[in-house]
Structures are given as C-alpha cells and as structure tokens.
Length: 185
Image (spheres, rainbow, N blue to C red):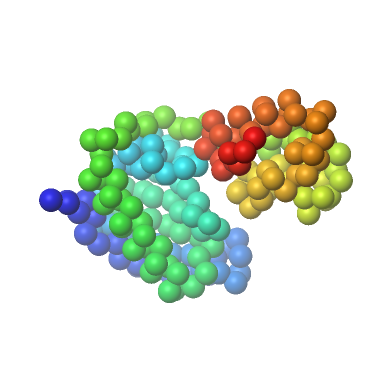
C-alpha cells in the first residue's frame, strides 16, 4: 500500500516576485516536518543543492526556483496562481513517490559541488563571439549556472575540433555537478 508522507501542502502567502515583476512567489506549509526525506530528494532531484546543517533543499523546475525547508516551501518566478497550484501538487506527488521508493534510494547527505561562473568560463572558447546570444562568454557561463541557457548554445565549442578537450572537460564537469548536458558528446 502506498503511504502518503505529505498529505497536504497549503499555500499561505502569494507575493510579488522580487526577481521578475511579471511573476509571483509563494510560501506554502507542509502538514508535517519533511527534514527526514530531504536526503532522498537530494539524491533524486537533478541539480538539487542540499544544505544539511540548515535542512534546506533548493532546485529549479523549469524557470521556477524552489526551496524546501522542514515545514514550508518557497517558490519564486512562478507564472501565476494556477501554476503555483500545479507546482504544489507536483511537489506533493514527488515527495510521496520518493518516500515510497526510499528503500531503493541511497540518501545523499552531502551538498553537491556548486559550480561558479568562472568554473564554466574556464572551459568555454573565450571568443566573446555572441553566437550564444550573450555579450560575452562570462555572461554565458552565468546563464548556464542559472540554468537559463544550454551549453549547446555555444556553437564554437561544438563545431571547432580544436576545442574538443575543453568541450569534453566542461560536459564532464556539468554532468558531475548535476547540470543538464547533451548525451551525444
């Protein structure tokens, strides 16, 4: 029988988003303390950042930034109230599914390595060509870290054979730290 770890997540506040004025942010409360499932979520949600000492887990779902605390969840850059409801439902379903599979999941108690823009910039072509849509390679590196751009947007990295070692190293670094990467390379 499937067990519900969280029976309800109730939206308590809807506020203007600080990062994007066309969006909202929400604060919702869990019906129970969720700290014991955070390491399982950390192991299961791609790109999550877990801070064990503070019992927080932060990750993105598309554009939305989601931070879980023991008793509440905060979401920023949410399109509207309807989308907030969908995200809360998705989160409750995900928590309960992971709880029911916890015997199959090795909990991850450590924080994954968090990349900095300079970590990514080091392996970009550093041509500042703008083909990615950014003014320079450092701005592009920041967009990759923020998950706003794909590394695939850097055409010189994937078309110039002289950059194959940089490409290989950057893709490996991104994979190891939970960032989305193409499988073809």
